[in-house]
Image 1 (cartoon, rainbow, N blue to C red):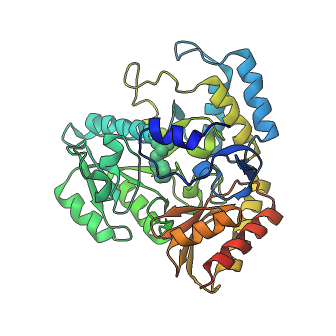
Image 2 (cartoon, rainbow, N blue to C red):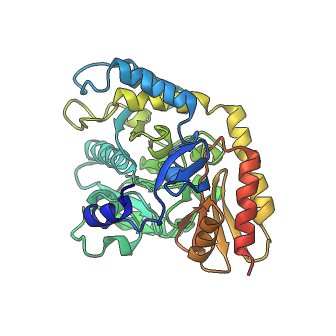
Image 3 (cartoon, rainbow, N blue to C red):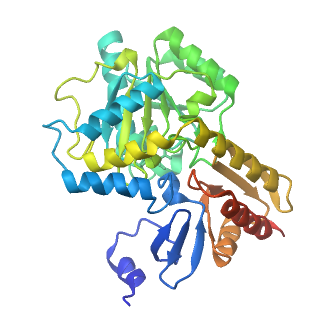
Length: 388
Ligand code: PLP
């Protein structure tokens, strides 16, 4: 057997702190390492494998499309791309979809659409996109500029200009900024994922949406991590009773294949015209076929199960010894532990449970259909690992 870890360390760019595990196979929410060890997967590839590993319906949808045509370029029509766009619009009330390959690209499209809308409607000096402190919107230079965490910016300046950050939950800060700056759009994550699984309050999100609507400032909701059933609603904004102008999503949409989407609402549906934007792989028919399989199964019954499983996790962990706080919504859960999160995660790995981290928290993003028995087994391991 090859030493793929050593090979990876020798040849793959050194940008990821990988766990010392080589995953070779899996089924549903269980993955197997090259040493034969079984793990319960509570990360699902960072909220990507919505229905777990090698899910039968997803695999069939993807392989059926793979056997027909794997790529056409965007010079031609394909059924999966058109059908997926229709499904996304019908389920959100949005009007048009631009497909890319990742969350960062979905946000790039959202930002370009907002900039063009504002330039045409309010003039070329109205371009500022406001995001929140502690946010995360991606790793391209523009989405880094959008990301409200300084430490991601260091050594990569100059970033794309025209971004400003305000503290979350502070309408006065946004109002003060609007006094001196022309704002094209406000972009938020309803739950800051990489920022440590920090949900915004309903009052703040509603006030912000109202503030934006009154001034014709676009509201962009970044649903890259929170989207596609993750929070117990199809999109997290639906938990807040607001209607964004643009929604960006990716991760769980493709169920394991690279796919991002910017959903464009009424105000911006026709802002981007021929040649304004594009992506060679965007809307790839195989990725879209996978996404149709994912999206068509995120129905009320499944969302109810997500909420019910979430409640069980909160119930088990809240107030448990060594657990200081549990945050999040649906199956996007952050655990503030008394011990360093790293130690808890390492202990869980020893016991066959894969968790993620987000800042100083242990983060759980299991597959939406994780069987309750497996989830309970894994949460018991976490509970034990948190104990001092
Ligand atoms: N936006 C949010 C909220 C994210 O959580 C992420 C990734 O973690 C991104 C954007 C970037 O997505 P991608 O890594 O697919 O470019």
